Length: 231
Image (cartoon, rainbow, N blue to C red; front, side, top):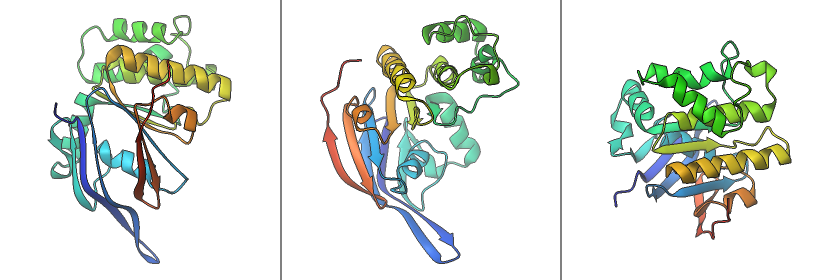
């Protein structure tokens, strides 16, 4: 089975006032379709940069990233955006909802931009699945942090992506709400068979993924298969 994500010799350097700064060094990894992968590491270890490169949000200084059969560094920004639109969903620590749109409209927006028929029905269904059927007409400032993150998850899954990238999705939430969001994330992931790449500092959350890699100083320092906890 072909890997849905593959990175070979991936490095990232940036120019600063003090000179060249290496953020990632010679990283190679592969993710199978439907797999759940956790990436952990201390702040500054490079994990968010790695996610950005794997998702085509940035380009590497060296190496190759293949996403759903597409060589991302060979594409311009428009081409990478098209790949993301076809294959990728995102859930971020900052919910990134549009405050002038209702919960329903926030979930509908990416579907409408793709020209998808039945956008409203699909958005309603996913908001129902995350427990927000009674909050469709509410605007983000009228929702709690947990409710806003549920909208973000519904928005990501409504697009039915092959790959979901989640960057500290519960970082701004209290522990009880965060647990609820994690259960939703893994439950919807299992239902849809979506590949999940998750950045987290929570060991218990990482252990719910099938595989766990650790980073330090821009390098992979450990990889492990995990016994997946029940969702």
